[in-house]
Image (cartoon, rainbow, N blue to C red; front, side, top):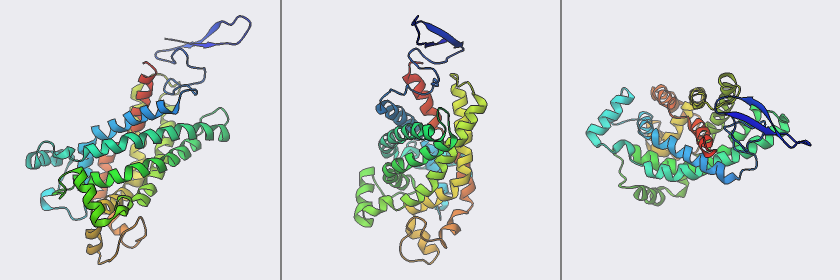
Length: 322
C-alpha cells in the first residue's frame, strides 16, 4: 500500500512519500502513525477503542485473574492451595463447577468498559498536550509516563468498586450469591468506604505501573517497529514485555490491594492489630503480608495479563479500516 500525502502548491497534486506494507490509510496526515487516529477525531472514538480493548483484556484473562486472587490469599483454605495455574484451574473446574473461574466476570465487564474508555481518552489528550510542551513535534517518553499516570486516576476511580466485588466473588467459598448480593452486603455491613478502602493502595501500585508500562512500551516499539508499520505482533510483544517489567515492580502492592479488598479482618487478627487497614497507613503490618510466597506466584500470572494497550492499538487499526 502506498502512502500518499497532499502537498500544498500551485499544482495541488499529491506526492508519494514512501511505500510499505500496511502503512497509513488515505486521509491520514503525514507524520501520523497508522496505529493512531487523526488528530481531528473525536474523543468518543478513543473511548470506544479503549473500552473494547479493556473488556477484551479482562474477559480473556479472567480465569487466570481468579487464580491470582486466590494465590494472594493470606490464609487460604487447604482446598484452595495451588501449585500451578493449570492445576488451580483444573481443580476449580472439577470441584466447584465449569463456570467457577468466571464468577464475577459480569461486574468486571461493567467496570472495565467505562474505566478504560476514560483512561485512553485522557491518555491521548494528555500525551499530545504534554508532548507539545516537552518535545515539540516529537514523542516524549516523559509525556507518555505522565499521561499514563494521570489517566490512572480516572480509571481507578471507576474500577476500584468493581475490583472489590470481583475479588470477593472470586474467593474460595465466597458467601455471596450474586454480584448484587455482594454489593448490598458489603454496603450494609462495612459501609460505602469499603468499596474504596484499597483506592490509595491501588493508585500507589497503578500510577508507577502505568508510567513504567507506557515508557517501556514506547521504547520497545521504537526498537522493534521504528517505522511504525502495521505489525500487530510488535504491539503484543511490546505490551507483554512492558507489562512484565511493570508487574515486577508493583506486584507486592497488588497483594496488599487483594488483602484490603477481601481479607482485612483476617490480616489484622493474624498480626494482633485492631481497627482498619486504610491504604498504606499501617506500615508495620503490610510489608509482612507483601512478601509471602504468593508474591512470586502472582508475578508469574501478571506477565500474561497486561496487554490492553497493545490490544487497544490493534482496535484502533481496525477502527481505521485495516
